[in-house]
Image (tube, rainbow, N blue to C red; front, side):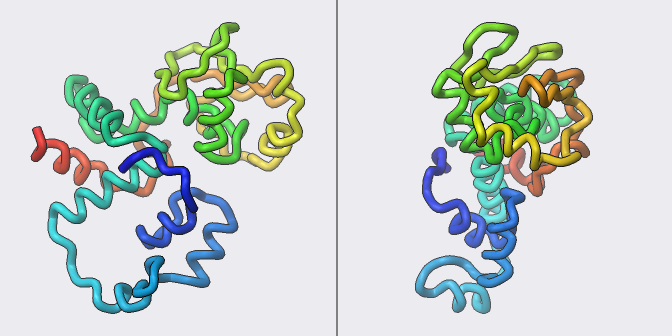
Length: 209
C-alpha cells in the first residue's frame, strides 16, 4: 500500500474501523458502517470469511496506512526487525514508532501523521539542534526533537498541543512551552496504540521471502 494522500475516512470505512483517532472519523463510521462505493452495503452483508492471505494482507495494509509508509519501506522495516533479537512483530512496531514524523504525532505537536510528515518535509523540525527533513529518520534515545522558532508559535501547533490532553506515551518527555519532545526510553508493545495483529503481518512477509 503506497503512502496515502486521499480521503482518510474512505480508507477507514474499507477496513471497518477507526485507525486515526479523531472524532470526525468516529462519527463517519457510526453513520455509515459499511465499505465505501456503490455496492458497499451489499459487501457488508455478503462478505464471508477471508482467506489467511487476505487477513494477513489486510493487517499489513492497516499498518502501512497508520504510519503512512510505502510498501518498499515497510518491507525494509520488516527485514530489519527480523534481524533483531526478540519478537519480530514487536520489533517492527517499535521501528515504526521511532520514525521522526510519528514521534511528532505521538507528542501531540501535529494532529495527524500526515501533518507531522509535512512539518518534517518542509524543514520545520530540528533534531539535536540541527534541521532534519527526513520523516523516516529513526529517533534514538536522548534525541531532542524541537520545532523551529518560527513554527513554535504557529497557531495550528499551539492548538494541537493544547488539545492533546494527557495522551502522551510514557516513553516520551514533552516540553509544551518549547514544542519539544525527547525519546527517553524505547516503547513497549503494550504502549503502542495500533489496532493490528502483528503476527499476521510477520506471516505475510515471511511467505514472500
